[in-house]
Amino acid sequence: MQKTVERENLNPYEIVQRQIDAAAALLQLPSHAVEILKRPKRVLAVSFPVKMDDGSVRVFEGFRSQHNDAVGPTKGGIRFHPDVTMDEVKALSMWMSFKCGVVGLPYGGGKGGVICDPHELSPGELERVSRGFMEAIADIVGPDTDIPAPDVYTTPQIMGWMMDTYSRLKGAYSPGVITGKPIAVGGSKGRNEATARGCVFTILEALKDSGRKPAETTVAIQGFGNAGRIAARLLTELGFRIVAVSDSRGGIYDRAGLNIQKVGQLKDASTILDYPGATVITNEQLLELEVDLLIPAALENVITAENAERIRAKWIAEAANGPTTPDADKILREKGVVVIPDILANAGGVTVSYFEWVQNLMHYYWSEQEVNEKLQTAMVNAYRAVAELAKKYNVDLRTGAYMISLLRIKEAMEARGWI
Image (cartoon, rainbow, N blue to C red; front, side, top):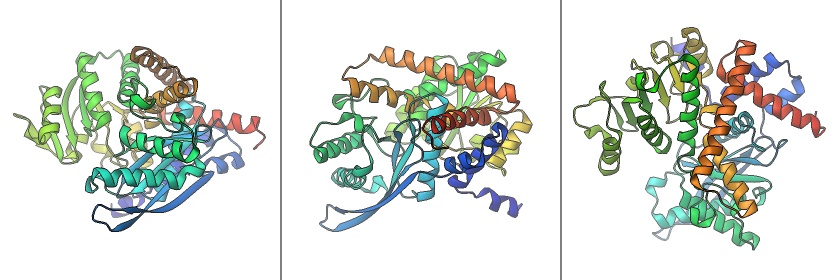
């Protein structure tokens, strides 16, 4: 057993390379094309000084990875987290390429991160870190080259500071350099809910294929941040019964169903663990509950070969990036669990980021209803295309999603004469 655990402790970069190999083999892609896709085109490591509130100077480290720009400029979030590594950022930029490919966006993948704990920074220090990182990467980003966005522990306000810093450096107002901004400076309506809403659209399509009704479906959600919390609200409005949710402190479970509005109030005021009448559970226990639908909406590598056999959900919708390891995928597939992969399930965020970028470039902005309607069309079409290809090749949805993306990127590389 110990040997299996060690093998499962793969870093994300190794995991995404295995996923590329599996899909490329089915498509019989030429080896040189696969080798290009298994590595980012460019990775920048930076360090930059920030003056702290006590007058001291602290040097922060960060990274920006640009995977492949054959289809268009690279696109992807910036995370502020103490555990950020170069390999993680590289892998996330690659997942972004495939995520953009699944929904047919004219983007390659990018990703960035700063090694820090934003909870330990004052508002002023957070602003100076945000501006310092943008100054450090400004030479390789831009509306036509690489467009960052929010990610773990970064916010619309942080995007606003970064956009302002870039605009000052370039001497021109440049809202198109970054997405996920406040609406007052070129943000898009509907962006805040886009990741969760897109995930819900794919869930509805998956249930439709099996004839399952929302009112008959129980749900457990690991992670009650932006995506998990909004998904819980949207699913509740559609009639789903949310029986368990969790955050970094732990989870709560009530077979009769949770009042999601009450859970949100407790999250804001104290802790969700104070929910009256619910059983307090761990994040690990939540994953193994007997529910119809499981939504991992936290961090990567939470479903592994060690616990996959104990997963009892019939459907898994990956609102988080990389929550399931390749070995766990095999086990789930053998058990008949339908996994809506991250590069499809959570592609709503980058889709509306694309809408924001388009609106910035043409200086014309859409209503929230229009944004949501366009998002629904994009997500439903993407799910249908992936499901049809997966059925044709008799593979799971994840492999089908990678196959669609790999084909689109390969065609672009051929058209540009790279291969």
